[in-house]
Length: 195
Image (tube, rainbow, N blue to C red):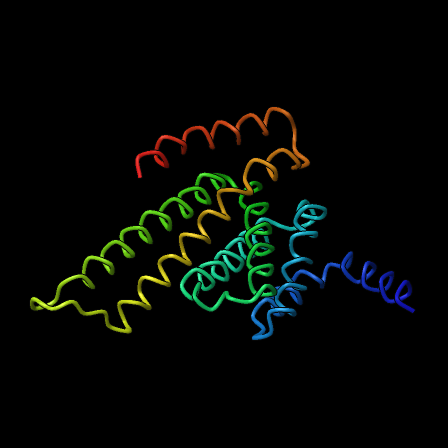
């Protein structure tokens, strides 16, 4: 029974309609459903990117980018293993999309570096504000929440950056294009170390 269902699922994923359906499922409130959708998108980007028109590619790039942005804005909700696993799969799908879009990898790296920088600044500000207020030490719930969310966003940024080498190595692209993408990474390296 499981083998039959698995074959049916594999067959369905190969269909063109799986793109739109998986994008819709990515908006579910259930992280298990989101993971399923993100996994489909990741697989389809790796195997079927070339079947999309330029308009569809642009739409997919924007939609998955918005989804990732929502995750980042609500990073403190990513406490369960399923939620974290789902986030990682969305990041993997987005990374692969970015590698197939002109200047996409540079944009991906900028997003992750900007997220790291702004989150580090936010957490430092929250800590400094909690030290002394009116001569008394005070830590408000909003300060703790700001600090916690900033730390969670730092973790999202680090996940985004950590997967780059392995995924870049396993992309099904020409050697020349692989070298171009590697150079984009090197170009971003200096900015990362300036943080």
